[in-house]
Image 1 (cartoon, rainbow, N blue to C red):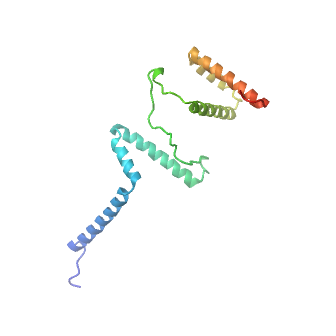
Image 2 (cartoon, one colour):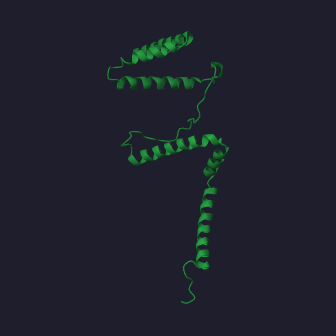
Image 3 (cartoon, rainbow, N blue to C red):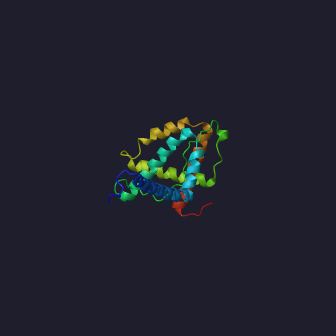
Length: 174
């Protein structure tokens, strides 16, 4: 065994280098063949540099929450994360004037109304005083509305009350 290479000899280093290169080739091949990874890299490179840290922080937080919910089977958080929200937005939309607001669809209005009613019920349910403390808060918000928006709220509430009376009275809608 006088001819056996000693640790650190060129043949050992070449063998180690070959193994490292083979592993690197395998990893790069796997990553390069994943179309979703390719899309992710393309989006990241198009993203403004100043946004990257914030967007990555959001992704990291959401992935950690998803993994935590999966690992704890909802025992800790009570949250069940079913799937990613395909309508989620990462950027705030700021409008200088009302004319710049995007058009709202009937479906968006309906869903927002149902969500608002559900949120109001949860606020009332969690209130220790039966919701009495919410009155001043709601009044403050209503005071901030301009007269045309207050009139729209009034008309919407009256319309909703009429529908509830029809529903609870069993009469057909009209």
